[in-house]
Length: 246
Image (cartoon, rainbow, N blue to C red; front, side, top):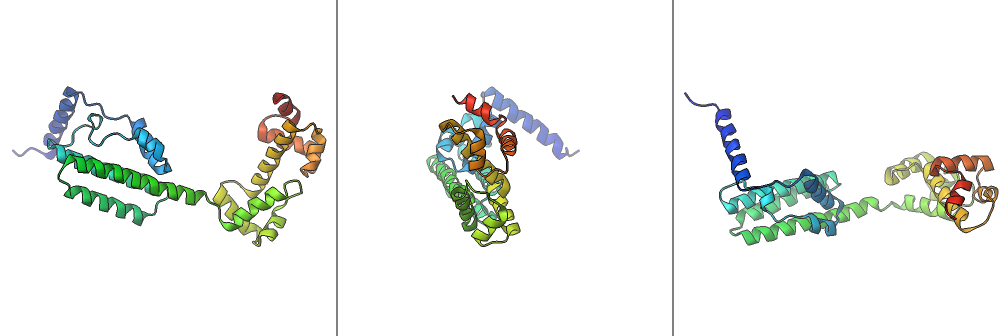
């Protein structure tokens, strides 16, 4: 009677687990592995260098009795994970898949361990450096959003409304509002409020102006409204904040 695939695979897996335990192989923790790939995704080369383990180290276990083949398997797995994290981090699919195919193909042709280790480092840092550029590109605001931020900075001590800002930037209010939220992650009105409260905090720390005067300087509609917004933002009243900084 021919045994089913399961009856072959289960003992085989048990043997692999047993052999790894006998040789004291401890697989890298999930947390460390996640931290490494997240560092690549963030484009953090310094952190990647600290977290990167040598390809095929004892902590990774053996995937083949042939040392060279085991390294190639580990290389392919690493590239697949790099590709996945890169895509999740914003790299376009075509670029990521092309890199993946190229590196795996090049590794398959290598004949010694030293070259595989060298290619592994090159691939990791290639993905990391490309992701850094991707992250910086995502963080860089578009022209209209830059103009909006600059306008708010210059007119922070005036009454600011979305209509006047949109007119100054040359866009409709609704479009600017959507664009600003998409690029910064915060509504335009929320950003204005945040910047006014940040300025109020500086004025409370570095000047002796009364709270009512600060509220007026920052064009809040009333003293009481300023206190309400300040407490909602910082968790303290203006008076409590000033006292905590002296």
